[in-house]
Image (cartoon, rainbow, N blue to C red; front, top):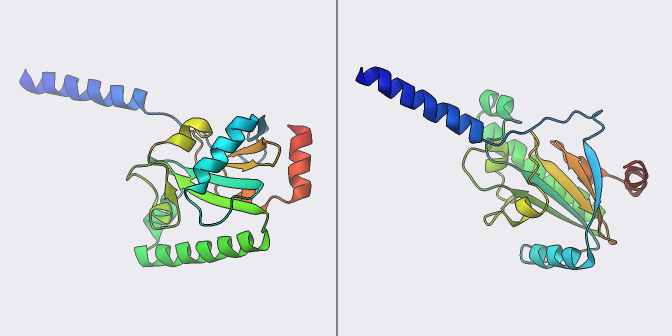
Length: 188
């Protein structure tokens, strides 16, 4: 009898925890809802710039790109399961060098990469010491509450408009050209 009660209790707790866990959607490249455009007020834009200044040794530029990854992410599980930690750390170094080169080639842009706090994150993100942990969840609550598998990104423009890209696993936002952004603003 005790075993049956314990089993019922365990099942109830499991179902409750599953139902409370936030879900995330994987947005495919051709998904019309994958990219959206929003507008910040002048005061919100200044607040974001002031917040980001605490994480940068450089002046915050007029255009800002923020990548955001989530705890309990599954995007990179295949790599986690099929590569050694040493290989993953090498991959992270390559990614960091590549991002530095791209950011250096675009001097009018401030680039930040954040992640939600927690320990259930893919190793490719966990091993990257340049990713800033959003300890107080300020950016999460301001921009990134809508979870997407493989993270989200935003490109904030000087006028406060921003392009929100869902499931941005390969950091497309960092590669958007001025022409692409203009096109996205017109369509969205």
